[in-house]
Image (cartoon, rainbow, N blue to C red):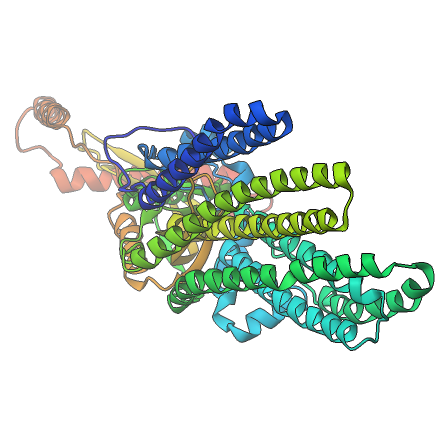
Length: 638
Protein backbone atom coordinates (compact mmCIF):
# COMPACT_ATOMS: atom_id res chain seq x y z
CA UNK A 1 0.00 0.00 0.00
CA UNK A 2 1.27 3.46 -0.81
CA UNK A 3 2.81 5.50 1.98
CA UNK A 4 0.32 8.38 2.27
CA UNK A 5 1.95 10.84 4.62
CA UNK A 6 -0.14 13.10 6.81
CA UNK A 7 0.65 15.27 9.80
CA UNK A 8 -2.16 13.53 11.72
CA UNK A 9 -0.75 10.06 12.27
CA UNK A 10 -2.82 7.00 13.18
CA UNK A 11 -0.66 6.20 16.20
CA UNK A 12 0.62 2.84 14.88
CA UNK A 13 4.13 1.99 16.10
CA UNK A 14 6.58 -0.71 15.10
CA UNK A 15 5.51 -3.91 16.93
CA UNK A 16 8.55 -5.99 15.92
CA UNK A 17 11.42 -4.20 17.68
CA UNK A 18 11.96 -6.82 20.38
CA UNK A 19 11.62 -9.70 17.96
CA UNK A 20 14.06 -7.99 15.57
CA UNK A 21 16.59 -7.51 18.36
CA UNK A 22 16.55 -11.23 19.24
CA UNK A 23 16.91 -12.16 15.57
CA UNK A 24 19.82 -9.79 15.01
CA UNK A 25 21.74 -11.24 17.98
CA UNK A 26 21.07 -14.88 16.99
CA UNK A 27 21.99 -14.22 13.37
CA UNK A 28 25.25 -12.56 14.38
CA UNK A 29 26.23 -15.56 16.50
CA UNK A 30 25.51 -18.00 13.66
CA UNK A 31 27.48 -15.83 11.23
CA UNK A 32 30.44 -15.92 13.62
CA UNK A 33 30.27 -19.73 13.64
CA UNK A 34 30.39 -19.60 9.86
CA UNK A 35 33.43 -17.33 9.94
CA UNK A 36 35.16 -19.69 12.39
CA UNK A 37 34.49 -22.60 10.01
CA UNK A 38 35.82 -20.71 6.99
CA UNK A 39 39.04 -19.97 8.85
CA UNK A 40 39.75 -23.73 8.94
CA UNK A 41 39.44 -24.10 5.16
CA UNK A 42 43.02 -23.13 4.30
CA UNK A 43 44.56 -25.66 6.72
CA UNK A 44 42.18 -28.45 5.65
CA UNK A 45 42.92 -27.93 1.96
CA UNK A 46 46.58 -28.72 2.57
CA UNK A 47 45.68 -32.12 4.06
CA UNK A 48 42.73 -33.14 1.86
CA UNK A 49 40.92 -31.14 -0.79
CA UNK A 50 37.58 -32.89 -0.18
CA UNK A 51 37.72 -32.09 3.53
CA UNK A 52 38.75 -28.51 2.74
CA UNK A 53 35.82 -28.01 0.38
CA UNK A 54 33.51 -29.58 2.97
CA UNK A 55 34.62 -26.95 5.50
CA UNK A 56 34.08 -24.25 2.87
CA UNK A 57 30.51 -25.40 2.14
CA UNK A 58 29.64 -25.61 5.84
CA UNK A 59 31.13 -22.20 6.60
CA UNK A 60 29.50 -20.55 3.59
CA UNK A 61 26.07 -21.93 4.51
CA UNK A 62 26.36 -20.81 8.14
CA UNK A 63 27.64 -17.37 7.14
CA UNK A 64 24.87 -16.79 4.62
CA UNK A 65 22.18 -18.12 6.98
CA UNK A 66 23.41 -15.98 9.86
CA UNK A 67 23.78 -12.86 7.70
CA UNK A 68 20.29 -13.29 6.30
CA UNK A 69 18.82 -13.78 9.77
CA UNK A 70 20.68 -10.71 11.01
CA UNK A 71 19.40 -8.69 8.06
CA UNK A 72 15.81 -9.68 8.82
CA UNK A 73 16.30 -8.67 12.44
CA UNK A 74 17.73 -5.27 11.55
CA UNK A 75 14.95 -4.75 9.01
CA UNK A 76 12.42 -5.20 11.81
CA UNK A 77 14.27 -2.59 13.85
CA UNK A 78 14.04 0.05 11.13
CA UNK A 79 11.42 2.78 11.02
CA UNK A 80 7.89 1.50 10.54
CA UNK A 81 6.30 3.46 7.68
CA UNK A 82 2.56 3.78 8.18
CA UNK A 83 0.48 6.02 5.91
CA UNK A 84 -3.04 7.34 6.39
CA UNK A 85 -4.66 4.70 4.16
CA UNK A 86 -4.03 1.73 6.44
CA UNK A 87 -5.26 -0.76 7.47
CA UNK A 88 -6.83 -2.75 4.65
CA UNK A 89 -10.51 -2.20 3.94
CA UNK A 90 -13.01 -4.95 4.60
CA UNK A 91 -14.36 -4.89 1.03
CA UNK A 92 -13.52 -2.96 -2.12
CA UNK A 93 -13.46 0.73 -1.27
CA UNK A 94 -15.56 2.84 -3.68
CA UNK A 95 -14.49 6.17 -2.21
CA UNK A 96 -13.36 8.37 -5.11
CA UNK A 97 -10.44 9.84 -3.19
CA UNK A 98 -9.03 6.39 -2.32
CA UNK A 99 -9.12 4.62 -5.65
CA UNK A 100 -5.34 4.13 -5.90
CA UNK A 101 -5.15 2.51 -2.47
CA UNK A 102 -8.26 0.43 -3.19
CA UNK A 103 -6.63 -1.15 -6.26
CA UNK A 104 -3.45 -1.99 -4.34
CA UNK A 105 -5.23 -3.62 -1.41
CA UNK A 106 -7.67 -5.63 -3.55
CA UNK A 107 -5.80 -8.99 -3.26
CA UNK A 108 -6.01 -8.82 0.54
CA UNK A 109 -9.76 -8.19 0.78
CA UNK A 110 -11.60 -10.81 2.81
CA UNK A 111 -15.23 -9.69 2.49
CA UNK A 112 -17.55 -8.17 -0.10
CA UNK A 113 -20.29 -5.56 0.19
CA UNK A 114 -22.84 -8.36 -0.14
CA UNK A 115 -21.35 -10.41 2.71
CA UNK A 116 -21.07 -7.36 5.01
CA UNK A 117 -24.72 -6.48 4.32
CA UNK A 118 -25.68 -10.08 5.07
CA UNK A 119 -23.75 -10.01 8.34
CA UNK A 120 -25.52 -6.86 9.54
CA UNK A 121 -28.99 -7.91 8.46
CA UNK A 122 -28.63 -11.47 9.75
CA UNK A 123 -26.74 -10.64 12.97
CA UNK A 124 -24.02 -13.15 12.09
CA UNK A 125 -20.26 -13.24 11.61
CA UNK A 126 -19.04 -15.18 8.60
CA UNK A 127 -15.45 -14.92 9.85
CA UNK A 128 -16.02 -17.86 12.17
CA UNK A 129 -16.42 -21.04 10.14
CA UNK A 130 -16.47 -24.61 11.33
CA UNK A 131 -13.25 -26.65 11.14
CA UNK A 132 -12.73 -29.25 8.44
CA UNK A 133 -11.44 -32.79 8.97
CA UNK A 134 -11.00 -35.09 11.94
CA UNK A 135 -8.01 -33.34 13.49
CA UNK A 136 -9.54 -29.87 13.07
CA UNK A 137 -12.77 -30.89 14.79
CA UNK A 138 -10.83 -32.70 17.51
CA UNK A 139 -8.71 -29.65 18.38
CA UNK A 140 -11.65 -27.22 18.23
CA UNK A 141 -13.67 -29.55 20.46
CA UNK A 142 -10.97 -29.52 23.15
CA UNK A 143 -10.58 -25.73 22.88
CA UNK A 144 -14.03 -24.36 21.94
CA UNK A 145 -12.91 -20.71 21.99
CA UNK A 146 -10.37 -21.47 19.31
CA UNK A 147 -13.24 -21.11 16.83
CA UNK A 148 -13.45 -17.38 17.61
CA UNK A 149 -9.84 -16.55 16.74
CA UNK A 150 -8.60 -15.26 13.35
CA UNK A 151 -7.60 -17.76 10.68
CA UNK A 152 -3.81 -17.46 11.17
CA UNK A 153 -4.02 -18.30 14.89
CA UNK A 154 -6.49 -21.13 14.30
CA UNK A 155 -4.26 -22.54 11.58
CA UNK A 156 -1.20 -22.24 13.80
CA UNK A 157 -2.95 -24.08 16.65
CA UNK A 158 -4.15 -26.77 14.26
CA UNK A 159 -0.67 -27.27 12.76
CA UNK A 160 1.03 -27.47 16.17
CA UNK A 161 -1.60 -29.94 17.34
CA UNK A 162 -0.97 -31.96 14.18
CA UNK A 163 2.80 -32.23 14.70
CA UNK A 164 2.26 -33.10 18.37
CA UNK A 165 -0.19 -35.89 17.57
CA UNK A 166 2.09 -37.07 14.76
CA UNK A 167 4.97 -37.29 17.19
CA UNK A 168 2.95 -39.25 19.76
CA UNK A 169 1.71 -41.58 17.03
CA UNK A 170 5.28 -42.01 15.78
CA UNK A 171 6.47 -42.97 19.27
CA UNK A 172 3.69 -45.54 19.53
CA UNK A 173 4.52 -46.91 16.07
CA UNK A 174 8.19 -47.22 16.90
CA UNK A 175 7.36 -49.03 20.14
CA UNK A 176 5.31 -51.51 18.12
CA UNK A 177 8.19 -52.04 15.68
CA UNK A 178 10.62 -52.40 18.58
CA UNK A 179 8.40 -55.05 20.17
CA UNK A 180 7.91 -57.01 16.92
CA UNK A 181 11.64 -57.00 16.11
CA UNK A 182 13.08 -57.70 19.58
CA UNK A 183 10.67 -60.58 20.23
CA UNK A 184 11.76 -62.30 17.01
CA UNK A 185 8.39 -62.06 15.26
CA UNK A 186 10.06 -60.41 12.27
CA UNK A 187 12.78 -63.05 11.90
CA UNK A 188 16.48 -63.17 12.60
CA UNK A 189 17.66 -61.10 9.61
CA UNK A 190 14.98 -58.44 10.17
CA UNK A 191 16.45 -57.83 13.62
CA UNK A 192 19.51 -56.34 11.90
CA UNK A 193 17.73 -54.15 9.35
CA UNK A 194 14.09 -53.56 10.33
CA UNK A 195 14.63 -51.37 13.40
CA UNK A 196 17.23 -48.98 11.87
CA UNK A 197 15.32 -48.71 8.59
CA UNK A 198 11.96 -48.08 10.30
CA UNK A 199 13.65 -45.56 12.57
CA UNK A 200 15.05 -43.63 9.60
CA UNK A 201 11.70 -43.69 7.79
CA UNK A 202 9.85 -42.57 10.91
CA UNK A 203 12.28 -39.70 11.49
CA UNK A 204 11.97 -38.64 7.84
CA UNK A 205 8.19 -38.62 8.15
CA UNK A 206 8.28 -36.55 11.35
CA UNK A 207 10.78 -33.92 10.16
CA UNK A 208 8.88 -33.52 6.88
CA UNK A 209 5.68 -33.02 8.89
CA UNK A 210 7.37 -30.38 11.06
CA UNK A 211 8.79 -28.58 8.04
CA UNK A 212 5.39 -28.56 6.35
CA UNK A 213 3.76 -27.17 9.49
CA UNK A 214 6.36 -24.37 9.67
CA UNK A 215 5.64 -23.35 6.07
CA UNK A 216 1.89 -23.40 6.66
CA UNK A 217 2.12 -21.18 9.75
CA UNK A 218 4.46 -18.76 7.99
CA UNK A 219 1.98 -18.09 5.15
CA UNK A 220 -0.16 -15.57 7.05
CA UNK A 221 -2.29 -14.66 4.02
CA UNK A 222 -4.29 -17.88 4.37
CA UNK A 223 -7.97 -17.16 4.95
CA UNK A 224 -9.42 -20.68 4.66
CA UNK A 225 -8.86 -23.55 7.08
CA UNK A 226 -7.59 -26.67 5.34
CA UNK A 227 -8.78 -30.15 6.07
CA UNK A 228 -6.75 -31.96 8.70
CA UNK A 229 -7.74 -35.61 8.76
CA UNK A 230 -6.57 -38.57 10.80
CA UNK A 231 -5.92 -41.12 8.04
CA UNK A 232 -2.13 -40.76 8.31
CA UNK A 233 -2.21 -41.79 11.97
CA UNK A 234 -3.95 -45.08 11.26
CA UNK A 235 -1.73 -45.74 8.27
CA UNK A 236 1.40 -45.17 10.32
CA UNK A 237 0.25 -47.62 12.97
CA UNK A 238 -0.67 -50.24 10.34
CA UNK A 239 2.71 -49.93 8.61
CA UNK A 240 4.55 -50.28 11.92
CA UNK A 241 3.02 -53.72 12.29
CA UNK A 242 2.92 -54.98 8.72
CA UNK A 243 6.37 -53.89 7.46
CA UNK A 244 8.47 -55.74 10.08
CA UNK A 245 6.37 -58.88 9.79
CA UNK A 246 6.43 -58.96 5.97
CA UNK A 247 10.14 -58.15 5.98
CA UNK A 248 10.76 -60.97 8.45
CA UNK A 249 9.06 -63.49 6.19
CA UNK A 250 11.14 -62.74 3.09
CA UNK A 251 14.49 -61.41 4.37
CA UNK A 252 15.56 -64.74 5.84
CA UNK A 253 14.90 -66.43 2.48
CA UNK A 254 16.39 -63.76 0.22
CA UNK A 255 19.46 -62.73 2.20
CA UNK A 256 22.29 -64.95 3.35
CA UNK A 257 24.43 -62.91 5.75
CA UNK A 258 27.68 -64.20 7.21
CA UNK A 259 28.29 -64.23 10.93
CA UNK A 260 30.98 -61.52 10.70
CA UNK A 261 28.66 -59.25 8.74
CA UNK A 262 25.88 -59.89 11.24
CA UNK A 263 28.21 -58.93 14.03
CA UNK A 264 29.21 -55.72 12.28
CA UNK A 265 25.61 -54.70 11.54
CA UNK A 266 24.55 -55.62 15.05
CA UNK A 267 27.21 -53.33 16.48
CA UNK A 268 26.34 -50.53 14.04
CA UNK A 269 22.64 -50.80 14.72
CA UNK A 270 23.36 -50.54 18.39
CA UNK A 271 25.28 -47.33 17.75
CA UNK A 272 22.56 -45.73 15.58
CA UNK A 273 19.20 -45.66 17.25
CA UNK A 274 16.20 -43.49 16.48
CA UNK A 275 15.56 -43.08 20.20
CA UNK A 276 18.09 -40.27 20.45
CA UNK A 277 16.46 -38.27 17.65
CA UNK A 278 13.01 -39.05 19.03
CA UNK A 279 14.21 -37.62 22.33
CA UNK A 280 15.25 -34.39 20.55
CA UNK A 281 11.83 -34.29 18.89
CA UNK A 282 10.24 -34.69 22.31
CA UNK A 283 12.29 -31.77 23.67
CA UNK A 284 11.34 -29.67 20.66
CA UNK A 285 7.65 -30.53 21.05
CA UNK A 286 7.67 -29.60 24.73
CA UNK A 287 9.47 -26.31 23.96
CA UNK A 288 7.01 -25.38 21.22
CA UNK A 289 3.98 -26.18 23.36
CA UNK A 290 5.43 -24.45 26.43
CA UNK A 291 6.19 -21.26 24.49
CA UNK A 292 3.04 -21.05 22.34
CA UNK A 293 0.21 -22.35 24.53
CA UNK A 294 0.33 -19.58 27.22
CA UNK A 295 -0.07 -16.91 24.55
CA UNK A 296 -2.74 -18.91 22.75
CA UNK A 297 -4.73 -19.39 25.96
CA UNK A 298 -4.44 -15.67 26.78
CA UNK A 299 -5.67 -14.79 23.29
CA UNK A 300 -8.62 -17.18 23.56
CA UNK A 301 -9.56 -15.65 26.91
CA UNK A 302 -9.94 -12.27 25.19
CA UNK A 303 -12.26 -13.60 22.49
CA UNK A 304 -15.70 -12.00 22.80
CA UNK A 305 -17.74 -13.07 19.75
CA UNK A 306 -20.72 -10.69 19.75
CA UNK A 307 -22.99 -10.14 16.74
CA UNK A 308 -25.19 -7.24 17.85
CA UNK A 309 -26.30 -4.16 15.92
CA UNK A 310 -28.36 -1.05 16.59
CA UNK A 311 -31.37 -0.53 14.36
CA UNK A 312 -33.65 2.41 13.57
CA UNK A 313 -36.82 2.34 11.44
CA UNK A 314 -39.48 5.03 11.13
CA UNK A 315 -41.88 6.68 8.69
CA UNK A 316 -41.60 10.47 8.45
CA UNK A 317 -43.57 13.13 6.55
CA UNK A 318 -41.34 16.08 5.71
CA UNK A 319 -41.33 18.98 3.25
CA UNK A 320 -37.97 18.20 1.69
CA UNK A 321 -36.74 16.97 -1.68
CA UNK A 322 -35.37 13.36 -1.55
CA UNK A 323 -32.04 14.44 -2.99
CA UNK A 324 -31.58 16.79 -0.05
CA UNK A 325 -31.92 13.83 2.32
CA UNK A 326 -29.21 11.85 0.56
CA UNK A 327 -26.89 14.84 0.29
CA UNK A 328 -27.23 15.65 3.99
CA UNK A 329 -26.63 12.08 5.14
CA UNK A 330 -23.56 11.59 2.95
CA UNK A 331 -21.93 15.02 3.21
CA UNK A 332 -22.89 16.08 6.73
CA UNK A 333 -23.97 13.20 8.98
CA UNK A 334 -21.42 10.63 7.82
CA UNK A 335 -18.64 13.17 7.30
CA UNK A 336 -19.00 14.12 10.97
CA UNK A 337 -18.07 10.55 11.89
CA UNK A 338 -14.68 10.56 10.21
CA UNK A 339 -11.68 9.58 12.31
CA UNK A 340 -8.85 12.11 12.06
CA UNK A 341 -10.56 13.54 8.98
CA UNK A 342 -9.92 10.42 6.93
CA UNK A 343 -12.51 9.63 4.22
CA UNK A 344 -14.99 6.93 5.09
CA UNK A 345 -14.63 3.52 3.44
CA UNK A 346 -17.59 3.24 1.05
CA UNK A 347 -18.50 -0.36 0.28
CA UNK A 348 -21.88 0.34 -1.34
CA UNK A 349 -22.15 3.75 -2.94
CA UNK A 350 -25.08 6.04 -2.23
CA UNK A 351 -26.65 6.21 -5.70
CA UNK A 352 -30.21 7.49 -5.11
CA UNK A 353 -32.79 6.51 -7.70
CA UNK A 354 -35.66 8.99 -8.30
CA UNK A 355 -38.57 7.64 -10.35
CA UNK A 356 -40.50 10.69 -11.52
CA UNK A 357 -44.17 10.25 -12.42
CA UNK A 358 -46.90 12.57 -13.72
CA UNK A 359 -48.52 15.44 -11.80
CA UNK A 360 -45.39 16.11 -9.77
CA UNK A 361 -45.38 12.73 -8.05
CA UNK A 362 -42.71 10.06 -7.77
CA UNK A 363 -40.81 7.57 -5.65
CA UNK A 364 -37.20 7.27 -4.52
CA UNK A 365 -34.81 4.76 -2.94
CA UNK A 366 -31.12 4.53 -2.09
CA UNK A 367 -28.65 2.34 -0.17
CA UNK A 368 -25.35 3.04 1.52
CA UNK A 369 -22.79 0.81 3.27
CA UNK A 370 -19.82 2.58 4.84
CA UNK A 371 -17.12 2.06 7.44
CA UNK A 372 -15.33 4.85 9.22
CA UNK A 373 -11.54 4.96 9.27
CA UNK A 374 -10.46 2.18 11.70
CA UNK A 375 -8.86 3.52 14.87
CA UNK A 376 -6.27 1.61 16.87
CA UNK A 377 -7.98 -0.07 19.86
CA UNK A 378 -5.71 0.92 22.72
CA UNK A 379 -7.36 -1.36 25.28
CA UNK A 380 -6.84 -4.38 23.01
CA UNK A 381 -3.26 -3.56 21.96
CA UNK A 382 -1.87 -3.60 25.49
CA UNK A 383 1.58 -4.76 26.56
CA UNK A 384 0.48 -7.30 29.17
CA UNK A 385 1.65 -10.27 27.08
CA UNK A 386 4.95 -8.76 25.92
CA UNK A 387 6.90 -10.87 28.42
CA UNK A 388 5.44 -14.11 27.07
CA UNK A 389 6.04 -12.94 23.51
CA UNK A 390 9.67 -12.21 24.36
CA UNK A 391 10.08 -15.71 25.80
CA UNK A 392 8.60 -17.20 22.62
CA UNK A 393 10.99 -15.18 20.44
CA UNK A 394 13.96 -16.08 22.67
CA UNK A 395 13.20 -19.83 22.54
CA UNK A 396 12.85 -19.65 18.76
CA UNK A 397 16.27 -18.01 18.39
CA UNK A 398 17.86 -20.57 20.74
CA UNK A 399 16.61 -23.33 18.46
CA UNK A 400 17.95 -21.41 15.46
CA UNK A 401 21.41 -21.33 17.02
CA UNK A 402 21.07 -25.02 17.96
CA UNK A 403 20.26 -25.87 14.33
CA UNK A 404 23.40 -24.02 13.19
CA UNK A 405 25.55 -25.89 15.73
CA UNK A 406 23.97 -29.19 14.61
CA UNK A 407 24.81 -28.37 11.01
CA UNK A 408 28.40 -27.67 11.99
CA UNK A 409 28.69 -31.08 13.70
CA UNK A 410 26.95 -32.66 10.71
CA UNK A 411 29.82 -31.37 8.61
CA UNK A 412 32.28 -32.88 11.09
CA UNK A 413 30.51 -36.24 10.79
CA UNK A 414 30.69 -36.01 7.01
CA UNK A 415 34.43 -35.42 7.28
CA UNK A 416 34.75 -38.40 9.64
CA UNK A 417 32.74 -40.55 7.24
CA UNK A 418 35.03 -39.59 4.37
CA UNK A 419 38.08 -40.54 6.45
CA UNK A 420 36.55 -43.89 7.54
CA UNK A 421 35.61 -44.69 3.94
CA UNK A 422 39.15 -44.00 2.74
CA UNK A 423 40.55 -46.24 5.47
CA UNK A 424 38.13 -49.08 4.68
CA UNK A 425 38.86 -48.76 0.97
CA UNK A 426 42.59 -48.91 1.60
CA UNK A 427 42.64 -51.65 4.26
CA UNK A 428 39.26 -53.38 3.89
CA UNK A 429 39.01 -54.85 7.43
CA UNK A 430 35.87 -55.47 9.49
CA UNK A 431 37.17 -53.01 12.06
CA UNK A 432 37.31 -50.24 9.45
CA UNK A 433 33.82 -51.24 8.23
CA UNK A 434 32.58 -50.83 11.78
CA UNK A 435 34.15 -47.37 12.01
CA UNK A 436 32.53 -46.45 8.69
CA UNK A 437 29.09 -47.57 9.88
CA UNK A 438 29.58 -45.69 13.13
CA UNK A 439 30.44 -42.53 11.21
CA UNK A 440 27.34 -42.99 9.03
CA UNK A 441 25.21 -43.53 12.14
CA UNK A 442 26.62 -40.39 13.75
CA UNK A 443 25.94 -38.47 10.56
CA UNK A 444 22.33 -39.63 10.50
CA UNK A 445 21.89 -38.56 14.12
CA UNK A 446 23.25 -35.05 13.49
CA UNK A 447 21.32 -34.79 10.20
CA UNK A 448 17.98 -35.43 11.89
CA UNK A 449 18.99 -33.24 14.83
CA UNK A 450 19.68 -30.37 12.42
CA UNK A 451 16.38 -30.88 10.61
CA UNK A 452 14.50 -31.12 13.91
CA UNK A 453 15.97 -27.92 15.39
CA UNK A 454 15.59 -26.08 12.09
CA UNK A 455 11.89 -26.98 11.77
CA UNK A 456 11.23 -26.16 15.43
CA UNK A 457 12.93 -22.77 15.07
CA UNK A 458 10.79 -21.98 12.00
CA UNK A 459 7.58 -22.93 13.82
CA UNK A 460 8.52 -20.80 16.85
CA UNK A 461 9.63 -17.93 14.63
CA UNK A 462 6.39 -17.96 12.64
CA UNK A 463 4.27 -18.16 15.82
CA UNK A 464 6.25 -15.34 17.40
CA UNK A 465 5.73 -13.15 14.34
CA UNK A 466 1.98 -13.77 14.47
CA UNK A 467 1.64 -12.82 18.12
CA UNK A 468 3.83 -9.72 17.80
CA UNK A 469 2.09 -8.59 14.62
CA UNK A 470 -1.57 -8.85 15.62
CA UNK A 471 -3.20 -5.41 15.83
CA UNK A 472 -6.75 -4.57 16.84
CA UNK A 473 -8.87 -1.78 15.39
CA UNK A 474 -12.33 -0.41 16.06
CA UNK A 475 -14.63 1.34 13.60
CA UNK A 476 -18.26 2.15 12.83
CA UNK A 477 -19.98 0.01 10.23
CA UNK A 478 -23.24 1.51 8.98
CA UNK A 479 -25.92 0.38 6.53
CA UNK A 480 -28.64 2.80 5.41
CA UNK A 481 -31.61 2.11 3.19
CA UNK A 482 -34.05 4.92 2.38
CA UNK A 483 -37.32 4.52 0.47
CA UNK A 484 -40.40 6.69 0.00
CA UNK A 485 -42.64 8.80 -2.23
CA UNK A 486 -42.92 12.51 -2.89
CA UNK A 487 -45.41 15.03 -4.34
CA UNK A 488 -44.94 18.61 -5.55
CA UNK A 489 -47.15 21.65 -4.84
CA UNK A 490 -46.79 25.42 -5.13
CA UNK A 491 -46.71 27.86 -2.23
CA UNK A 492 -46.94 31.63 -2.95
CA UNK A 493 -46.58 34.58 -0.57
CA UNK A 494 -46.81 38.36 -1.12
CA UNK A 495 -49.92 38.14 -3.36
CA UNK A 496 -51.60 41.32 -2.10
CA UNK A 497 -52.22 44.06 -4.68
CA UNK A 498 -50.06 46.38 -2.61
CA UNK A 499 -47.15 43.91 -2.18
CA UNK A 500 -44.08 45.05 -4.06
CA UNK A 501 -42.23 41.72 -3.59
CA UNK A 502 -43.52 38.24 -4.15
CA UNK A 503 -42.19 34.69 -3.41
CA UNK A 504 -43.47 31.65 -5.26
CA UNK A 505 -41.99 28.24 -4.21
CA UNK A 506 -42.43 24.65 -5.34
CA UNK A 507 -42.72 22.55 -2.17
CA UNK A 508 -41.88 18.85 -2.26
CA UNK A 509 -43.68 16.78 0.36
CA UNK A 510 -41.83 13.50 0.97
CA UNK A 511 -42.92 10.38 2.80
CA UNK A 512 -39.62 8.92 4.05
CA UNK A 513 -39.01 5.43 5.45
CA UNK A 514 -35.37 5.13 6.56
CA UNK A 515 -33.83 1.88 7.78
CA UNK A 516 -30.52 2.44 9.57
CA UNK A 517 -28.33 -0.36 10.99
CA UNK A 518 -25.08 0.46 12.75
CA UNK A 519 -22.54 -1.54 14.71
CA UNK A 520 -19.27 -0.80 16.45
CA UNK A 521 -17.00 -3.53 15.08
CA UNK A 522 -13.61 -4.75 16.30
CA UNK A 523 -11.24 -6.06 13.67
CA UNK A 524 -7.88 -7.81 13.76
CA UNK A 525 -5.00 -7.69 11.29
CA UNK A 526 -1.62 -9.46 11.32
CA UNK A 527 0.99 -6.91 10.37
CA UNK A 528 4.38 -7.70 8.95
CA UNK A 529 7.52 -5.79 7.99
CA UNK A 530 8.19 -4.19 4.62
CA UNK A 531 6.17 -2.18 2.15
CA UNK A 532 3.03 -4.25 2.69
CA UNK A 533 3.24 -4.08 6.46
CA UNK A 534 -0.50 -3.54 6.97
CA UNK A 535 -1.78 -4.67 3.59
CA UNK A 536 -3.00 -7.96 5.03
CA UNK A 537 -6.50 -9.44 5.40
CA UNK A 538 -8.51 -7.81 8.19
CA UNK A 539 -10.85 -10.03 10.21
CA UNK A 540 -14.08 -8.95 11.93
CA UNK A 541 -13.91 -10.28 15.49
CA UNK A 542 -17.01 -8.80 17.12
CA UNK A 543 -20.02 -6.59 16.42
CA UNK A 544 -21.50 -4.62 19.33
CA UNK A 545 -24.46 -2.29 19.73
CA UNK A 546 -23.86 1.47 19.66
CA UNK A 547 -27.13 3.03 20.77
CA UNK A 548 -25.54 6.42 21.59
CA UNK A 549 -24.00 6.75 18.14
CA UNK A 550 -27.26 5.69 16.55
CA UNK A 551 -29.19 8.29 18.58
CA UNK A 552 -26.72 11.00 17.54
CA UNK A 553 -27.09 10.05 13.85
CA UNK A 554 -30.89 10.11 14.05
CA UNK A 555 -30.89 13.46 15.90
CA UNK A 556 -28.69 15.02 13.22
CA UNK A 557 -30.98 13.77 10.45
CA UNK A 558 -34.11 15.00 12.22
CA UNK A 559 -32.47 18.30 13.06
CA UNK A 560 -31.72 18.86 9.40
CA UNK A 561 -35.32 18.08 8.46
CA UNK A 562 -36.74 20.45 11.10
CA UNK A 563 -34.56 23.35 10.01
CA UNK A 564 -35.52 23.17 6.34
CA UNK A 565 -37.18 26.34 4.87
CA UNK A 566 -40.06 25.92 2.46
CA UNK A 567 -40.45 29.66 1.65
CA UNK A 568 -37.64 31.64 0.08
CA UNK A 569 -36.88 34.85 1.95
CA UNK A 570 -34.47 37.76 1.59
CA UNK A 571 -31.46 37.27 3.83
CA UNK A 572 -29.19 39.87 2.24
CA UNK A 573 -29.38 43.32 3.90
CA UNK A 574 -28.95 45.19 0.60
CA UNK A 575 -31.77 43.24 -1.04
CA UNK A 576 -33.93 43.92 1.98
CA UNK A 577 -33.17 47.68 1.74
CA UNK A 578 -33.93 47.72 -1.98
CA UNK A 579 -37.26 45.98 -1.42
CA UNK A 580 -38.16 48.54 1.25
CA UNK A 581 -37.37 51.38 -1.15
CA UNK A 582 -39.54 49.86 -3.87
CA UNK A 583 -42.39 49.51 -1.38
CA UNK A 584 -42.10 53.20 -0.44
CA UNK A 585 -42.12 54.22 -4.11
CA UNK A 586 -45.28 52.17 -4.69
CA UNK A 587 -47.02 53.83 -1.74
CA UNK A 588 -46.13 57.30 -3.04
CA UNK A 589 -47.33 56.41 -6.54
CA UNK A 590 -50.72 55.27 -5.27
CA UNK A 591 -51.10 58.42 -3.22
CA UNK A 592 -50.29 60.64 -6.23
CA UNK A 593 -52.75 58.83 -8.49
CA UNK A 594 -55.63 59.13 -6.02
CA UNK A 595 -55.06 62.89 -5.58
CA UNK A 596 -55.08 62.72 -1.79
CA UNK A 597 -54.20 60.44 1.06
CA UNK A 598 -57.92 59.73 1.70
CA UNK A 599 -58.91 57.90 -1.45
CA UNK A 600 -62.28 56.48 -2.27
CA UNK A 601 -61.07 53.00 -1.52
CA UNK A 602 -59.00 52.36 1.54
CA UNK A 603 -56.38 49.64 1.71
CA UNK A 604 -58.84 46.95 2.72
CA UNK A 605 -61.18 47.73 -0.14
CA UNK A 606 -58.26 47.63 -2.59
CA UNK A 607 -57.35 44.19 -1.41
CA UNK A 608 -60.95 42.96 -1.72
CA UNK A 609 -61.13 44.38 -5.23
CA UNK A 610 -57.92 42.62 -6.16
CA UNK A 611 -59.30 39.39 -4.77
CA UNK A 612 -62.54 39.81 -6.74
CA UNK A 613 -60.58 40.28 -9.96
CA UNK A 614 -58.49 37.18 -9.36
CA UNK A 615 -61.63 35.13 -8.67
CA UNK A 616 -63.18 36.39 -11.91
CA UNK A 617 -60.10 35.34 -13.85
CA UNK A 618 -60.11 31.89 -12.23
CA UNK A 619 -63.85 31.46 -13.04
CA UNK A 620 -63.29 32.38 -16.68
CA UNK A 621 -60.47 29.85 -17.00
CA UNK A 622 -62.67 27.14 -15.42
CA UNK A 623 -65.50 27.81 -17.89
CA UNK A 624 -63.11 27.49 -20.82
CA UNK A 625 -61.70 24.17 -19.52
CA UNK A 626 -65.17 22.74 -18.66
CA UNK A 627 -66.51 19.99 -21.04
CA UNK A 628 -69.26 20.76 -23.50
CA UNK A 629 -72.76 20.26 -22.21
CA UNK A 630 -71.93 21.31 -18.69
CA UNK A 631 -74.11 24.06 -17.24
CA UNK A 632 -72.63 27.38 -16.32
CA UNK A 633 -73.76 26.88 -12.73
CA UNK A 634 -71.32 23.99 -12.41
CA UNK A 635 -68.36 26.28 -12.97
CA UNK A 636 -69.45 29.23 -10.92
CA UNK A 637 -67.36 30.13 -7.97
CA UNK A 638 -69.16 30.95 -4.74
